[in-house]
Image: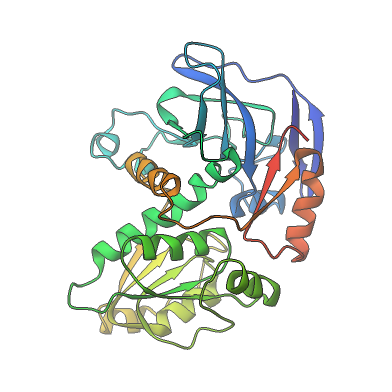
Length: 326
């Protein structure tokens, strides 16, 4: 099969590789669309030791089951593989499983390929009316869904339901969409890139500012740099909540003194539970997350140039999907 292989810092190549062999309980998926995630970009830049070269990246995927009794069924993929038996899994917090794996991270190859293997339990059936390209957005949307669910649960019931989202990429936009789907009408995105800001305003109908200067009870940091953590620390209302979902850099930024004196709740969030993924997929399918027409699609054969364009800041759309058929 054809696969886009990460071979070193800022090096991607289309290669012929052996298709994956499904293990017990797994199925083979013919990939129809797979998104480029921020974590893929971190690996591409050599910033993720968990993803060493050579490796097939990509975990935001949808496609069709190949072989077996469900052959041809259209599905979207929850890429987080967990043990199913530990206390975290038993409590429905599979994302905290100590044995968790994710496709695109050893020992599991990713979905920048024509085929990927995944446990059958990780699949959600896609209705015929929903394009598989749109269904591939379920994974990044679920990240925002999970983050927002935790943030709203932590927000004091006496506080105003108003939110500020730092970062207008896919996770930031996903968080804004999830906030509205969960009843928060007043949501502002902060995006410094002028082209992306214009895209979010004109194509997505979002309220977007270039700089964060409006305090809010709930702040979602979908970037995760020291500068955005510092801004979140400064802008969150006393008694408010910061939800940290971005993984831009590890250290710095938080004003711990202000957070302590003002009783600010800080929540780190990682991926999603299996129920979050299913709930988010259902919201995607029934239109609660909007038209979701803000992605662009490129052939897998042009994957290397797509990464280079993202690296250079040439992409206004929050998400690029790669099509392994091209």
